Image (cartoon, rainbow, N blue to C red; front, side, top):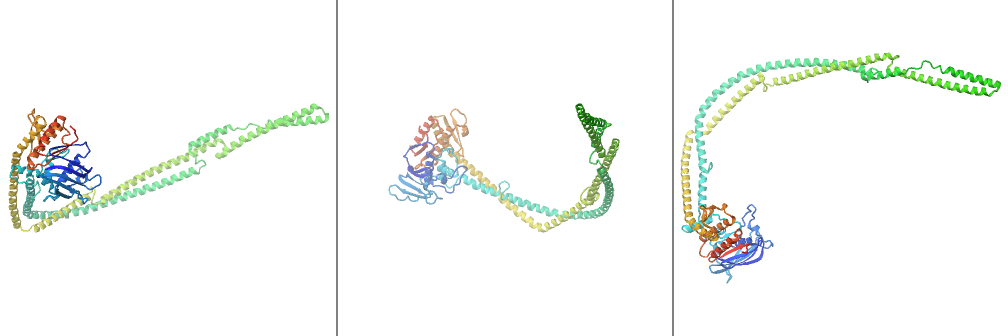
Length: 634
């Protein structure tokens, strides 16, 4: 088969066309220009779009990934040549959820439909292989050059190395055998482990039936002994509770009497304190402390000492009277004699009298002020002389001392009452604990717990006896159970024989698969080594391919082959390209080979190896159409 022309409305392709010829077709295009989209379009035209494909990680299914960017329906045509006939394949979309479902294949010369070709078998009829084999051999996607096996590819290999039958593969047969094997035994699961468990249960049941009768008799004897112990403990608990209750109530009565006595004493102390405080409050200076009153008395005593009146205030009065008399006398002589000096003398005597009277009045006022202040201070303390101040201070200090003594007595009695209250509270808690005959460390509590344990033991023994008797009734006849166990053992032996036979069949199948691979692998490795040698200029001369299509390469300078992980990116790409080309040559139909589609598989090669790889592709293109999409212009 050869591809001649493509026209696509697919992804970023909007009605674009692409033509090919026989031999080697190199389509150069830069990155992001649609090379991978054209490759996906070729695959979709041959095998259709899988509408059941789901997203895988970050990869979208083809129906979503290649939905036309233009919004137009997904569709396209492919012109091919197969069996010397030119065909036109068309796929269109009618339903949005079934892209490219509508298919037609007609002869280009006449437009007549191709008999027997439809959308499901088109790719397999034209390429000779299924979609899975096509993608693993002749269709080399970008970034997916590494070869891997599959059941479909195994069928193709068996076709080559055996009778040509392509209806089964080792993987499918091995999977079926493993399924049968796992049904019988898979670790702790399967029919055999289940049957083993059933037989073990049956055997355990027989053993239990044999031992249960003896156990019941032993437990009944023990139950009677426990009941006797319970009767003795009940009497001991009753007596211990009576003693414990009497002692607790006696201690409570004594404690409450002590609290009442301390409370009466505290009440008396409070009354005395109230009386002392009231006496201090009613005193003349109850709002002052002793020190404050002492300081105030000292200050007022000092003030009294400084308030002393002058001895006599009449000393200024006599000169004033004398001056007044002389002024009157002089004025009288002036009236008789009418002499001017006498009037002047009378004026002077008048002035002197006025001055002496003013001085007398001032001294009298000062003396009266001193007496008033002294009287105020003495009235303040309700005394007549300053010496009585000491008695006032002594009486006030005595009242304060009485209050302090009353407060100390009240505090002492209050603390004593609080102590008695705490003791009573402790006695009450102790009494509660002692009257709780189920907890605590008292004799009655310990005996009660021991009695409850004995009763629990009796109940548990009774329940066990009842349960064993019930199980014995439910177990049925031991003879019937023994017969069932014998039947299960026969089934187990039969199933174990089947398991061993399946295991033998699986080992035989693996040996057959190894033989098939050993017949195919040398030829495949030899052809891949020849391709590898040609593309590396003779540097790598040996390629070894495993059953899972993993590959190793050995250079002429190395004694051992190296895994792909130890090779450079370019060398690894060449190795797997050689494997792909060899598989295409040996595993694909040879009558009319299908095209080899390569999407940017040579990007990691240097110029020399790129030219060598292109030289090999040109040779292969002599017998098979090769379509290479690349971003390299070399």
